[in-house]
Image (tube, rainbow, N blue to C red; front, side):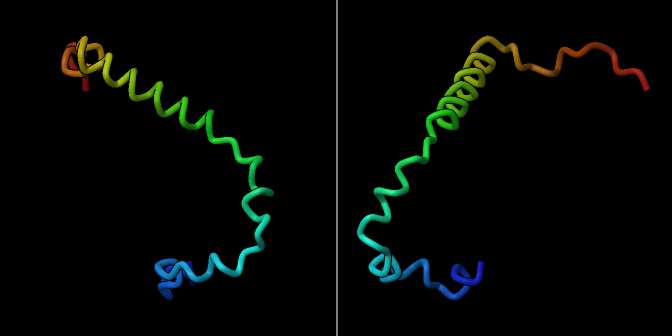
Amino acid sequence: MKIQLSGLLNDSSYLKGLPKDYYQTKNNENIFPFIANLASLEIFQMIALVTGAGEVDNSGVLQV
C-alpha cells in the first residue's frame, strides 16, 4: 500500500532491479482454475438472461 501511495508503481524502473531469472522462478502460478470458473459464471449468466431462468419477479406472494 505504501508503494502504491508513493506512486512508485507508475514508474517501471523498479522492474530493472529484479534478478534476470525472477520470471522463470514464478512459473508455478496456475490461474487456469480461476479463469475457468469465471468463464462458467459468465455462461450461466448468459443462459439466465436468454431463458429468463434467473428472474426473481415470479417468486409468489410475499408473506410477512
